[in-house]
Length: 179
Length: 186
Image (cartoon, rainbow over all chains, first blue to last red; front, side, top):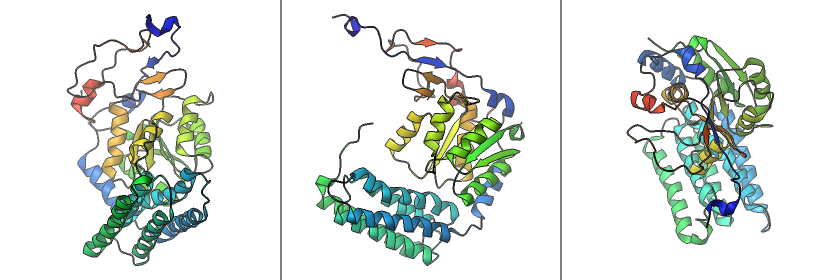
């Protein structure tokens, strides 16, 4: 058999190497450790109050939880999950930037959980609600840093709840999404 | 010798004001003299056309236009002043399928939040020292979704998947960058 069934090739790819004007502008040598340390110090000493931001994302997460509770069987499962996933992602992204790394750690677990379930069933929504309650307690309690032993115990409790869910609901995980 | 960032213009597109201000301050500490800002993809594209920045740093989740749509527009809109501008996408997502989605939209580098100053610097150094070649095909225009050569990797000398693929630019020499590392002199 001849290549491509005697058909003309459909896809052609053209490779282009643009001129590196950026390199020409900045030159070489990178940045000194001193500058990088100063930038890091600036980041670590920012005085942004995370609480009002967190409240916005937590409210959005709660709205997602309520929508998921009311969702009918025929509703778009991916959409329902996304209404909880996106605020979770915002909590993860911003917590650590504004002195609440424990919020980022917890929200990261929440994202991982939502990324692997196929459907937000009642039990899954209860777990998301537990994440919401715990993250809100961390924010209202102004638990900055990793929260010490207590913070790590809370994180472990959330993780264990997810693991128990996975063990019990094997049919609701593991669908491979086409990439 | 150090990077002369005062010659560079960077556009930050971010709807979260504290995050935008923080990123801007870090860039200014790096020495970037001109930082343009916008609060969503739509406004970002307008600023992009107006200022033609050297790098765009965009958040993913924004309304009415997100960072992915902004990137697609930068790559494909005829009004775009430079289709090749590097885009660094900031997001809390780190799952593989999200990275692939961003990559398929034409994003150059992916910066996972929360990040530190060095993470941001590394992504900027990457677009300076290891720029991706671009690919134009029927259904895609954007940075090559594969790195051409990695340190220690032998050049590919096997058959081409598409025999009529053509290269219209000088041979890629990214292996040099990978071996030297970002920021090192030639």
